[in-house]
Length: 606
Image 1 (cartoon, rainbow, N blue to C red):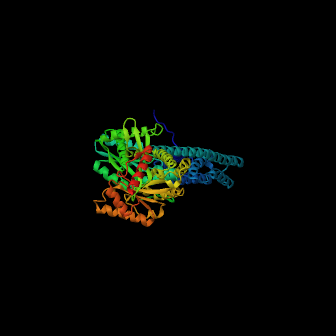
Image 2 (cartoon, rainbow, N blue to C red; image 1 turned 120 degrees about the horizontal axis):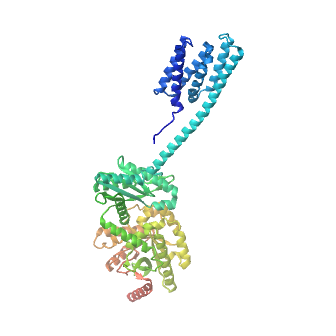
């Protein structure tokens, strides 16, 4: 179909001036007008031609309008006898359109032309009867005003059409931008990334696709709210773009997930960029009045080695990213072995969600005793999974899955409830031992944790001082401000708080001054080799002395032989745990074990 467009007023206006000027020159040529008027007509033609060839600025329109208006007025004054040809009216009308577009007082052109004509007739410049002169002046005025009214309506409609065109154009630009950019961050969209990956694969050149996911982002949303989560995503996007510079495509895939496409990059280049991206996030983010620290896990897939299709390459980068999260390494490169591992984890997680209702999770208890005489003082609750197909699964196989998925909250509630119920049964049977339960970093971000603990204490009837919650040092340092708030709330309930794996967090000891801690548990990595390793012995002694000076109990984990237990007692370490004392026991075996332990102590005393 042929695209036929009507000319606009802006395009026609200078052509009218050319036609009028040529008409005037023709009148002069036929002798119907004095020769001197040709100068005015030539000026009209010149301005019109200038407009036709492109001189159509506001200034050009105004100049052309003035030439036309002055010509009309001049003819009315100098040659009123030309009025029967209505030449003045032609010029009057032609002057109105550019004046309208220039935003000037075009309404006055018609009345002013009629007035000038009347003045000249009254002065005797033309033998025209008064009635005829008045009629002609009225015609000039009326036609000028009518033309002005029509011009105003035309201008309004054209302005409205222009506004509509501009709005449609801007809407189209917004739609195009929305289709290619993320609204929140301004980064490239998933579709842009997909097309870029497809082009890179078609070219046959190597390319590295990096998939990045923020760690603990859900905690920011859950604790501070989604508005802060959006602010964090925006700041992360800016840092990522700054870290890679110009060239690589940085896209947001949704939520807290980002992707970076590196053209002409191999695995080594992908690793370097991934490390640079992670380093760019190390500085805390300031979200209005809140300072937030986050890290990221990055998965790398390299084309064409890891996939010759964009969707496959993205899927493999995703597998690598989840491997980085699972191992805690922060960075992983795809390999075919990870596919099987990832599928196994997904299947295991699906089964884990129903393990509580199916009665597959069991809680066992590892005794904690006094180093001096071996008397039991507490039982640490340890969860195990009796899988119907895979057999017994150790915690390190399913606890990380529970933490990443959020199932850790249900799992902690189950262990807490079970441990307090058993503790109550032991106390009712005359066994005065407490119970300790491990709490993860995800639990510390849960505002409902203190309420849960309080409700379980009331339900079981166990005095709060007989419950101890163990928190790893790394969990504390992940977000010390929120950890401190949550621990204060828990400590206010009257229970005891222990720092597990103390000494492995490589963090400042200043937090011991601000946190309501009761117990330091010395990590087994120092205890196991303390008899052969003087450095390990010095570290254990330092922790014992630190705890003593701060009024804290100390517990040594991983005690494997009686010589180590004796050495710990001599060093002043209050309590100990380990296989030399006892392996984890089923709940039903705790009471017999404690009774047997009591008999042994009595025999030694005898």
